[in-house]
Amino acid sequence: MPKLDVLSTSAKKLAAISVSAKIFSAKINPHLMNQAVRVYLSNQRLASARTKDRNEINVTHAKVWRQKGTGRARHGSRNAPIFVGGSKTHGPSGFQTFYKKMPQKMKQLSLFSALTAKLKDKQILVIEGLEKIKPSTKAFDKIFHALVKQPQKLLLLIDIPQDNLKKGTGNLNYLQLHLAASLNTYQVLNSRYLIFTKSALKTFEAHYAA
Image 1 (cartoon, one colour):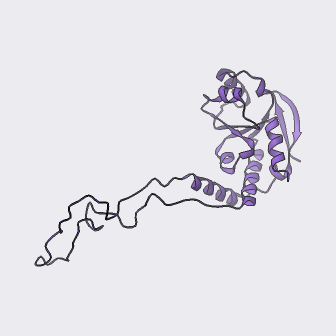
Image 2 (image 1 turned 45 degrees about the horizontal axis):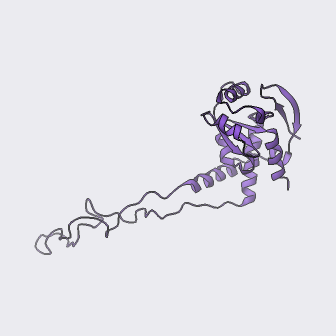
Image 3 (image 1 turned 90 degrees about the vertical axis):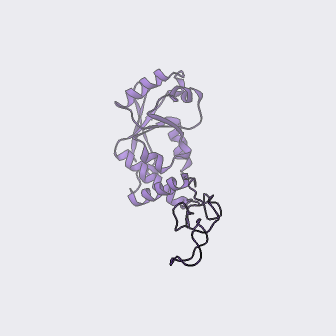
């Protein structure tokens, strides 16, 4: 079984714990991870783009030119899409949806694949004792600089919301706080280091134990 070191808030090793092989020693599947990321990002999109159709263009209702005698094709409205300033044909309506679905089993496998890759690259840390730290940005900044030399894109995973963590890490622009039970593939791949609290790791493994 794969193992992870449990670190103190001063980055000292406290113990080594075994973690689930199902989660942290899965087959690494780049194609499945790619699909999971595309589905996640697509589902974050909002239909904000919108163009006007012929009924909404505010221009003159006079004919473009007279019906006969010009030698040109007859036209009745300057709102037509072929004219400059006219409407848009088949443009975005503002109601289109980008929602995509992915089977739950595939989501899990892509998550396990991403976590396995992170563990292989030694980018998963486990820490104990954060709940005892006072809600101070300076104190938490010191802790994370001890854990990682140049902290960038850290994802701190907790089991339950904690006020001291929320207040103490809120101003750290290199860190995001998230509940472990709702972790997804995109968040794993988009972060440089995953930092589990010891209790969050147990909760996370129990969530996927079945």
